Length: 274
Image 1 (cartoon, rainbow, N blue to C red):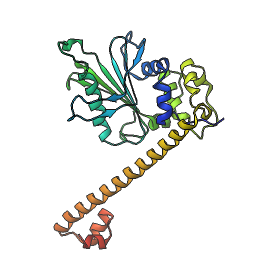
Image 2: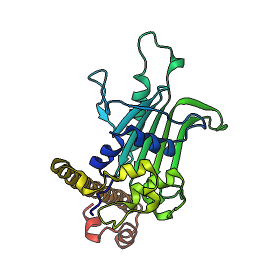
Image 3: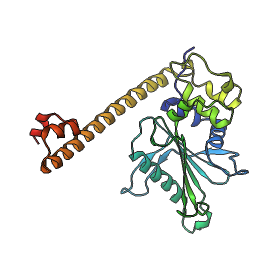
């Protein structure tokens, strides 16, 4: 039996964007919700963040929902990391927060927005942690917090590398996302023992997709691969530009072309042409 990767946009949205009981289990395990304030019921909202004026930017998220208290939850699966993604996350969460307001609405009634972001790359390479929780806090007293917006970034590859095997729900859901793909030969019984994860597993079988969904699944991988290639090329181009800037400065300082070449990685011919 062939498995599909749940990180793929088609499968991810089919699992978490159509089954509130699965999403509830997932969010309760991933988010830093206070004890006694876990999500009980969920209602899906439009994933499209529609601008109020033509001057605003139109964006969307993978999954957007709210619970019975009015708290909103935005979920995104990001396969290719760029620094601009953080700004987009902040924009979308802020947009969800401010669009709660209506004429005569009191600010005290605004409900929190949680943005959960799953990243298939290491975006903080110097940190050994895979789980990153951000909030608006006082710089000297972290217990003093401005309520309203909270962000969670989870680095999936870093989690996988640590090979964590306990049976906490957060670990089981992250194992679901990182262990199952087209190369997987079987699924751990530890995952199938949980009813919500077992239900989610039903959608990672290739046979569960229609012909149209399978086509979209394959197209999504093509898009991700193309994005990765373009991002890699852009990074390489940026490194070359930076090396050329360093070389120009070194030339002005009187350094030899040979030494500049060793320092920057540029050829002597490239340096002579600057």
